[in-house]
Amino acid sequence: MSSESITVHLIGDSTMAEKAASERPETGWGTPFADRFDDSVTVENHARNGRSTRTFLEEGRWQPVVRDLAETHYVFVQFGHNDEVPSKEQHTTEAEFEANLETFVEETREHGAEPVLLTPIARRHFDEGGDPKDTHRVYSELTRNVARERGVALVDMDARSRSLLRELGPEGSKSLYNHLSPGEHPNYPQGVTDDTHFSEQGARRMAELVLEGIDELELGLASHVVRDDR
Image (cartoon, rainbow, N blue to C red):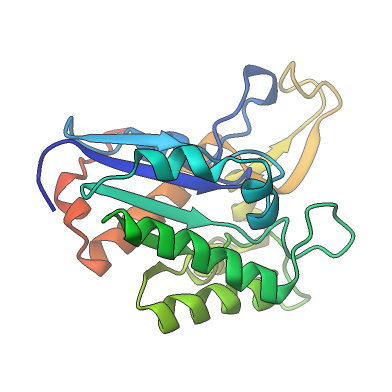
C-alpha cells in the first residue's frame, strides 16, 4: 500500500460510532481511534447506533463506502451486538450474518482495499466467580470463521476486551463503561448503568486494543500510529 493518503473506513454499531452531544459522555471507540494516526491517515466513521449487518446494508449505508474505496483504503467491520439478539428488530440469523460479513469482505477486495474483521467487544457481565462472561460467543465465532475461511485480518476484540475485564475485575471495570451517578452529568440526570457502551476512558482503552491488534497483524497502517500522550 502507498504511504500517502490512507483512508480507514469504520463500519459497525454504537460501540464504534461517533456520539451526539446529547449522548455524552458515552463514547464509541472510533472517536479516540481517529486521533491516533499521523496526517497521512483519514478515518471515516460510518458506524451508527443500533445497526446490525443486515440493517446497515438494507438502509443503503454500505454503498457510499464501497463507491469511495481505493487501493490505499482499509475497511474495519465490527458488528454482532444487535445482530445476535433475537428479540431485536435488527436481529440477523447466523447464516445471514456470515453472508453479510462475506459481502463486506468481497466488495472491499473488489476495489483493491483491505478488509479487517473485528469481533464485538464484550459486555461487562461477570459470573459469580468474578470471571467475565462470554457475552458474544456465537457471533464472535461466526466472525472468526469468516476471517479464517476468507483469509481476512482479524482483531479479536471479544477476547481482548474480556482479558481486560478479567484484569480489572467487576469493580475496576466499571470505569470503562457508561456508569454515572444521579446528577453526575446533565445528559443523565437520573444516572445510568450501561454495561455495553463506553465512557471516554473506556473508548480510549478499546481503541488501544484495536491498535495493538493492528500492530500484531503487521498491517501497513501500523507504521502510521502515533503515541497517545494523554
